[in-house]
Image (tube, rainbow, N blue to C red; front, top):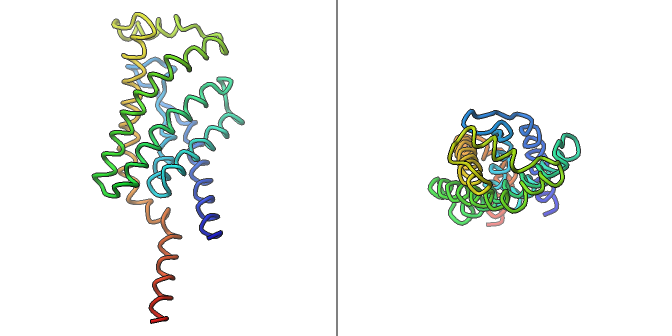
Length: 212
């Protein structure tokens, strides 16, 4: 039992470091403001949630952001807090649904529901918490955020419309990208993430066979 817990902790740690490193790879998308950048650092957490359970995925998100907060934060931890909460929403919802229904259909359903849940949660979080924190902690006025958004989309006139026309579409787009990558990679990395479990099951079966 101790060995299994240790192996699981090692896997979580490795996935957390991978996620932390992926946070440094950011891509701007022309239809969104420059400060909204796509990264795929939630990918290792999703892989971990599918293979090790939804709680493991949330722990990976936590460790990833702790590392980033310690070594690379440029937002006084506000960005890391938002990344953890929003990423955990995606990872937990997707991982839980896949845990209940372990099939390709369950994975797709989990990811779709996870992306929608994350996008709605991100909208609420940005409106009530994240953007006000940026204004109070980093002195980055919400009016400036709205102004940047209005240059890209004339429907944006205030914070409410910014959240609707920028935050929600951005997270939907990001979630879809990460979901596609997860579906493409999970089958390949799943045997590695389950390796110890497979070996343990094989040993147990051999033991039972010998006893019979």
